Amino acid sequence: MTETITDRQFEIIQVAGKILTESGVSGLTIKNLAKEMGFSEAAIYRHFASKEKIVIGLLAYLANNMDERYTTALDNNLNSEEKFIILFQNQFSFFHKNPHFVGAVFYDGLMEVSEQINLNILKIMKMKMKHLKPILLEGQKTNVFTNAIPVEDLAHIVMGTMRLQMFKWRGANFQFDIQQKGDDIIQSLLTLIKK
Image: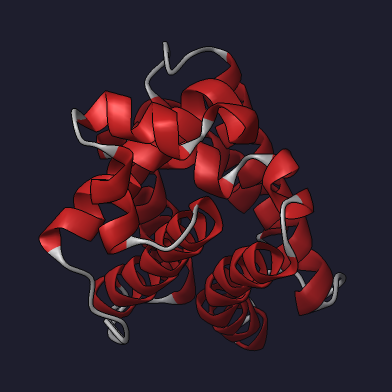
């Protein structure tokens, strides 16, 4: 990970993610965070200078974590279809275990908070593209995936579909099995993009 965070900072961003997921940006206040953690507000400020810094720390953690997970999971000996499946299974598995982070990644209102937060959300999207586009390109070169749609557009279709699935899961209050539904969506996408 490029930026190290302390154990306490990690605790804070986990609780911040939970509050964001449950109550949105307006619910994420230093007061609510301190109350949820059983700390004083001053204790939170010792670790983060502001609510914005907490959200930025959370997004930076998620981007770095995603990069590490994908890099580890994507074995070069796999074909493009196998890599595609593993990439998204990895993501669904992560959110299944960490639903408290869903609000940070899939909450549209977060983008209006600050330019720095916006840049960190874009960093997460770029991180996903960094790993997805080479898989799609390889699949096109090996005639596994359709060449009728440019890689950039294919990536947007795939990411948009996955994003919608995560919104539906959050909207259903995490009441369905995201890994099972994720596998179904992965197979549907493969049906659409394979030659």
